[in-house]
Length: 267
Image (cartoon, rainbow, N blue to C red; front, side, top):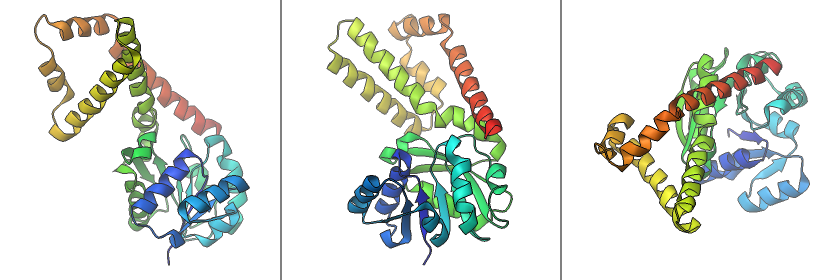
């Protein structure tokens, strides 16, 4: 019986665990590595899953999913490397950590896959990008795609594109939350009750996203459909262009990409 171990039971770790259970994975096929006793008991009670030490989980599993902070990756790899073996699959969800970084710290023959998830996985609307390392088979890459599909969509990309993916979809939810936050504050400034402004802005974001996905129409076309000549939307968009919002988004995503590269270089 194939077993999957999730090392790191923070928000994303539990999100993946919960998604796998909802997707039909049997709990006796899942292990969680967690050092905090209180957190371990909480997960055992909530999901009925076995929560064990990292080394125990890594030794028993066929697939090991590392859901740890980038700065903690080296320590975790040093801890579990002695119990890893050729033929195992290691998937990393840590931003900026390359497959070569992991491969250099685990036994020869261990397959490595790099994953960039994002937080909408919490509501099964995640966007994950996966990249295979140098010893990863098609079947092993497909296994990681299957794991991440339990919490959203999955895209296979070359690893050299991962820093850009981090800037777009990895950090992307924060940009959209920032836009909604700004719209709510503007609504309050314009005289709306905060609850009303919040409902208006949030549903507008949700509905717009659904239109983009379900119509398949280019965002420029959708934007033009809302923009009447000399109308209210045109006036608003002129202000956004005058304030160089488009250029600001580009600069922001370049900064996120560069930070992802720095994390890789410093790891």
